[in-house]
Amino acid sequence: MVSRGFSRLGGYRRNAKGIPLFHTRKITSNIEIEIDAEMASAIEKASHSVGKLVGSSQLLPNPEHFVYMYLRLEALISSRIEGTQASLMDLLQYEQERVEKERDDDLVQVSNHLEILQTLVSRKRRAPLGLDELIKLHAQLMRDTRGHRAAGRLRHQQNWIGSGGPIEEASFVPPPPGEVKPAMLDLLKFVHEERDLPPLLVSAVAHAQFETIHPFLDGNGRMGRFLIHYILWQRSIVEQPILYLSHYLRRRQADYYTRLQATRDNDELEEWCLMFLEGVTDVAVEALERSRLVIAAKTEMEAAVRADLGRRAGTALQVLERMYQQPVADVRQIAEWTGMTATSANTLAAELTKAGVFSELTGQKRNRRFAITRYLAFFTALDEADDPRAPRGGTGRTRR
Image 1 (tube, one colour):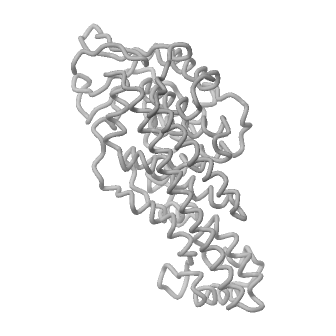
Image 2 (spheres, one colour):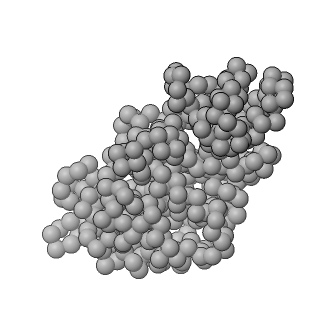
Image 3 (cartoon, helix red, strand yellow):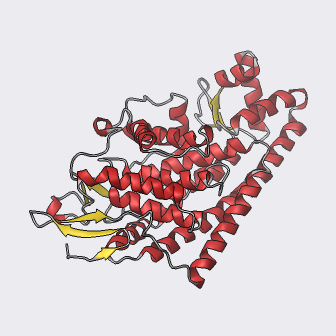
């Protein structure tokens, strides 16, 4: 590793063994971002795109169902950046206990990540995110996973980022353990007190500094991306966490890592902010179009139910409403939702399949499962577009 100077986030100093460690600076009072014409245009474009998405999501009859699908996607793809390979269909079946929970660590990780994203819907918006709460969220993220031994604790060991070799071959060595807590307290103060920068830039800078501090032995990437969602939600940029930004970061994973590293090595903080703003715009525009398609598909499916199911249409619409949030269900669940017998629920599912609203997934005569495939396809298409076999960036693995 070459010797480097100081950036606005901090700088390198060699330890007794000659290894360059990064030491952070306080960012509460020292951070300045140059907002030139290019940056101002990027901020305006991103803000406008998010505003249109937020407005569109409110047109959905039950936006919380739509949002929950986006939360699933964010949890999946953010976890995939760190190496998991679970799919959206895997997660939907896991939620219904169709997969042995103790068998698949990837699904446990994704499910835990989904839980911490959901906390934004239930917590008080104006309550500051303290270090204790962040540590508890980390414990929740790592619960019952391979990294559970370090769950809910700031690191007390030196970690490093690289491809798996010794620390001497690391691409980046974060601050020593003794500096982690003060740096995190300064970061959270910045998150809540910074008022000169637009909230989108606060999110970008906070994420870069969090990944630089690397405060945990595992889970730093996911917690750092959670912090982005928290800031945008807490600053009322979004009413609910509907930006699946990890989809963009996963598509440009090598650039993502390179840009973050350049904020430390070359003080290229503006370049990272521009990439971040481009990602926000890209995802917001894509999500807006997807919400329009969902609204159209929902209208057409419900029209088909009313046209084809006669006296059963009311009950069928009740089932369809439940499946916007849980797009895969079996006959037993349909019977529970409606109070019907299993035989009647099976008949209803068959009629919905004939009407083109449901698709049967198993091809079996017993224990059949159904999906509202047309609706689900808008989300599985995003999941499948993100190839889990794609090569990862060069600095994605944390070691200690």
